[in-house]
Length: 239
Image 1 (cartoon, rainbow, N blue to C red):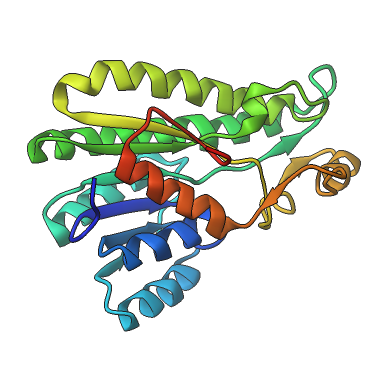
Image 2: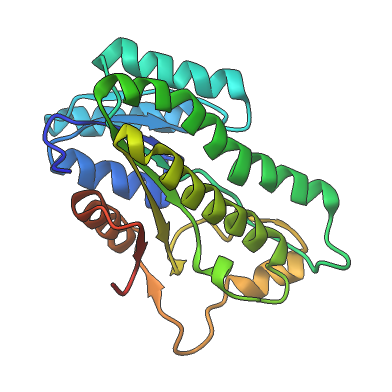
């Protein structure tokens, strides 16, 4: 898909990968809808994009609350008349072993990492069907392909998102709605700092091991843009 004049909804857009993706989509000519919990940050980002000539909408929303997610989609359609791309980027990590990690922490990341994308997909699909199609991008993680001690709680939510994506890809193909799963590696953002769970494990996870690549959010955003244009089922950072 070429993004000129397309309407792109990005969750978790106030910083990191989401913010970088908003900027590259705007540079490609898209009309951008930014969702996150921080209304103040969204207003700043939206103003910056508009100064660059982009049509943008700030839509504060807590992605764990289904009514707020539904309102996000409703406001997008009211403003722009359509939705062409949904990028489910909002997420949070949790550290802790499978044997001893907090069930309450796990519940919190499930609500954001799994239910949030589900709410958004279910809200956006009817609008995409009216358009004749669209693209859904789910931001997963390479941790979902690995078994890293202390990250099982987080990685399992992304593993579930992978299966949700693959199934939605098959179910929605007849509606011309394409589903892409993106797999970032370690990215230089505040994501690790915002993790919940075991403090000592969080500190260790924020220190990259020698030889392990660390990508900038701009690199990940470019890979997302490439995926939107080429429409692979899966997009990796070194592909």
